Image (tube, rainbow over all chains, first blue to last red; front, side, top):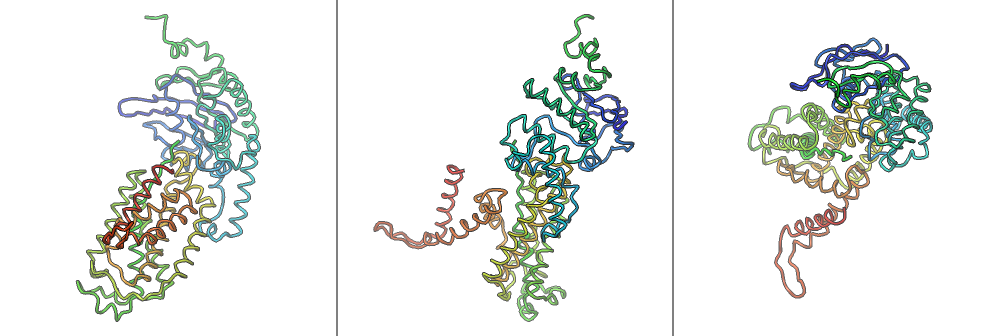
Length: 255
Length: 270
């Protein structure tokens, strides 16, 4: 297991956003985190990335406890994420957006960059070439020098995923990657994620509302409702599960 | 996505540090011995002495060191709050200068600073500063700073140590403000705490906002426009003959006109 969530609870004041949730993600798996709005999915992401400290329980990544680590250290351990609402660096070019992901892997010092030492020039060349490779993989290298905000919505999504891959992750967290996309774009994105999983040796944990997309893509899903796990298993079974249906549509039969 | 711009409002403090350090290192012991009128100087003040280059470097490094210390409290907050906290530190430095006459000669200031600085020094160091800043901007350190400015949370998600990026930006600017203060002291030959009040920072703010935030070229153009413009408009302070109507001298008139020009610029051109 690459990621283990052990009995995690997160309270905000009197409200429990997540209650004693446990699950594990196997290497190379595409794992879906689904549930109605307010179920605690993004909170779970924020706990894994270190933005929130869990009230109790632990997050274990590759046999290492992540609790208490700073978010930027967790990224460097190999967990990258994208955001629900695209958050590219708006004043920067597409290439610079991807370069940011490589920056902690570039080995040169502050004075070396001021004095333009050979090591600086070499390292910059190396990470620029690798950024272009990633952009090329996503078919975005033609836009490398455009401003990220000038791209279309679908292209910005791709750049955001490219940027996350630049940090060289083993686990990629995607927060509603298909949001705001039309059916054909969604399908293309699904194929891209599958392809990236094998080409970059990724494990993917994603939040998504589009059940067709989840069905097509995920090996396994976890359904959350009010911070509690109500289903864990194959996506096709989740759709038929009475408790899941009740969570989404309300309970008609009892009472 | 609106990027969150955070202003540091204490350049005046760092410029003051640089000016005082350079002044204390350059004024001859002889000149020091008669100008401390408020209190007797500490013995170490009398022995401080160095050449101009060392004085400028020390000015820069001490300002940067202070910035490093201040970054721990300052970067606990973001945005408007950061502006307020740094504004406070700017005032504190000026007040410290007034209240420690044993070092700074209080509100009387320091005089008889040898006039080492000239156009070549200031112009040359300005070029060096621009080159250094551009080299930083076009490196992973500059990219991290820009990322933090655009979206701090996204920067963290990309593995950027945002505290380090902010501290580096803060210390680098403090370094050059310190060196600038040293040049100022060696140009004016006389400094006092009043020189380093908030108006000083305000002028820098006008320059960078006019030039365009986040742009190095813009900062240079802004400097030329603001400093050159305020010199060029000096004639507005003098008595004038407007279409046969004599006006008296109105000191400060150019600042009024200048402010109006700025207001029109921001209202209609940006």
